[in-house]
Amino acid sequence: MGAMRFPSGPESESMSFGRDDIGWTPIMEEAQRATRVLHPEELDLPRPNNRRIITVANQKGGVGKTTSTVNLAAGLAVHGLKVLVIDLDPQGNASTALGVEHRAGVPSIYEVLLGETAVGDAAAQSTQSENLWCVPATIDLAGSEIELVTMVAREGRLKEALNSDSVNELGYDYVFVDCPPSLGLLTVNALVAAHEVLIPIQCEYYALEGLGQLLRNIELVQSHLNPALWVSTILLTMYDGRTKLADQVTAEVRDHFGDLALRTVIPRSVKISEAPGFGQTVLTYDPGSRGSMSYLDAAREIAERGVERTTA
Image (cartoon, rainbow, N blue to C red; front, side):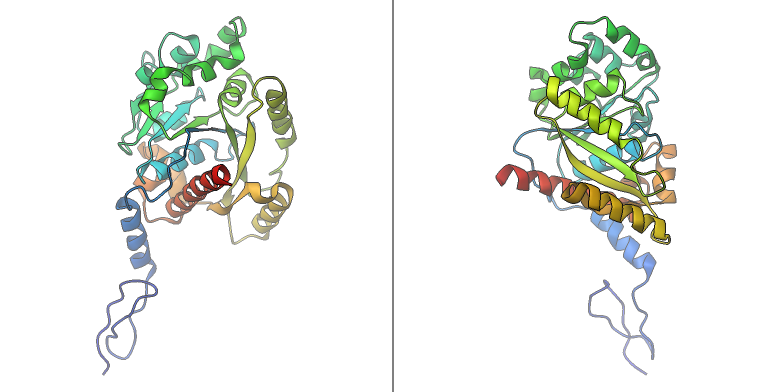
């Protein structure tokens, strides 16, 4: 009978037990992945030279905007980068996923847009990470577009708030803006305030339908309000490797957008869907899951691409 083996990793030396190898099991692999998430190396990701403000937009609902916003933010924060999420969707789903209170009366992005509250005063620390903060959305935001219509420089209210000295003093490395599923005044504010646009695209039928209007709106904002704005990232979400459709959509998106599309794709995952119901990101809810690791990989890719662009 052979010697006993206990595996310590998928590529590690193993010791055999009896005639058969115990081998590497999925449970053991998931445990190792969870350990890497919960105990990351300090500042494993590069810190940007200047604060990056990224708007996550797609007027089509159900494509993973909020899910991607909170999990990418958490993926950067868990590696020591300081991240702020602006919840600009009246539904407040990003606030829920980050464990931030957003009942009526709580200082929120609504008061920030009206100029009644500073970003720093409305930002609350997430329960997910000491490096992760969120300016929540309350139900008051639902009527804000009507109120903004009559205001001076209504398209630049968020930009003005984020450019304040108080925000600069807080030292955020990244600001993510989660947009509502529309192309209204809130989304325009998000585009005017941002440096970059991240567009999540689901790997399903009609993936590219409606994107033309979003891209035209981005061009209008570039022409008239924010010349520095550009689409920096395309993120493929809800990928199901069991279907040919997912591969076809992935190929179509990569052919259309080229290098803007991240190499990492986000799989369709029950864990990703369940996490917000517990007021958590998937990185906290199930750190060893495929969904968690995919968002960590996507966050790393975004961080590294940003450094490559600024040094090129």
